[in-house]
Length: 468
Image (tube, rainbow, N blue to C red; front, top):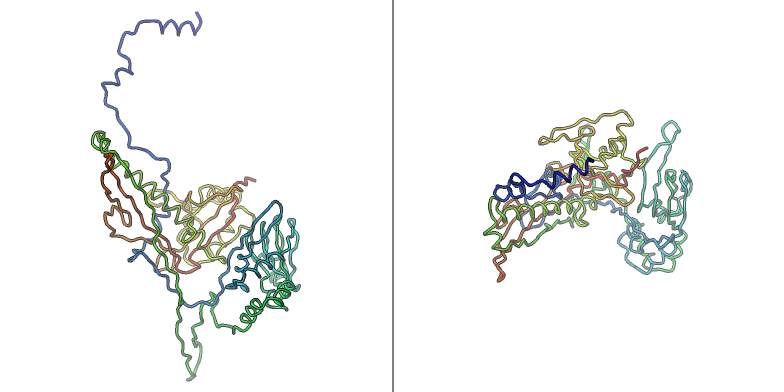
């Protein structure tokens, strides 16, 4: 008899005892609480120091600064043609606060698109700087001369960066470094000749340039803040300089953002199906978890106060070889004192681990609430899956100094709101509808503030898919 025939013969025999499917009708089932895949470790919410904000607004007062804010330029791509958005030219220091859209549009039309292959030289050290470069796509290395005549890496530029803007106002400007394409690059160039030609026809642009040239050199420290006059190392009885600390007259204010939802539960469900677990409690628990996940996402990605969008341009770095190497993280750490934490997507942490393996390095770990967290130079690297990964499989690594006392990054909340179940998180009963449905308003208020620019740094365009 074959195996199949034996199985059919056993199935044809009459049942001699109670089956498990029927027995379960008399048995008590042991159940788990409702599970949820969306819940993550949320290290940012756990490790960020929170400041209680009264009145819903937090003002960051700083010393008066003369530095012109640098920005990132945005382009529009149509097929293989790249154009700069005219208003984005206002990110150039020489055009900051200039708002004649017709002139900006004409300048944008004068931009010439150029393509460079890896290794091509865009500018040479010592040559006249007579055009502005707008990097639409690719990576450019700034190379200078070292103390012994060899090449020295001065930095890396990537999509949206610009260089050569000093050529707009200074006809005698020269290139202080060599710019070399590290990858295939698409660049828009705008010559000083075009600026001069348009300025001859535009009174507003000519007046704007004249005002910039007339501004006297402001005495400022290396951070752009107004200098505090001091005397040191003197002898005798010289006149001691007088000084004062000037403040920014228009400090930035952060308003608390909000995340809300209305949870609805039918009274029959809450009344009858409430053992052994309370339906209302479980519904609220999962809703609060989802709200906290969205809160952390906003703290990273919100365009108004999110960490990725509020990092100053000079605190944004590019990896020298694309992958997150120990050298890149060292450079990121040196941009600020007392870095307290690094945030990275788990895949970025894995890519960094591969680079350590190639060099035979083993990172130290730190015990945080029972979790072994990898560190670099003693700074913990916390995973955060809210940091986006692009289609090109690139992401960012965030470095932060935290706390008010350290002039770092702080989270903002308002404790003591009505019906609060956690600081700045409330659950309000809204009543029962005519359909016997109970409603609860679940609300959380939050924001984040960067107290000084160097408290936050980002290593951008980190490749996570390279295994070689």
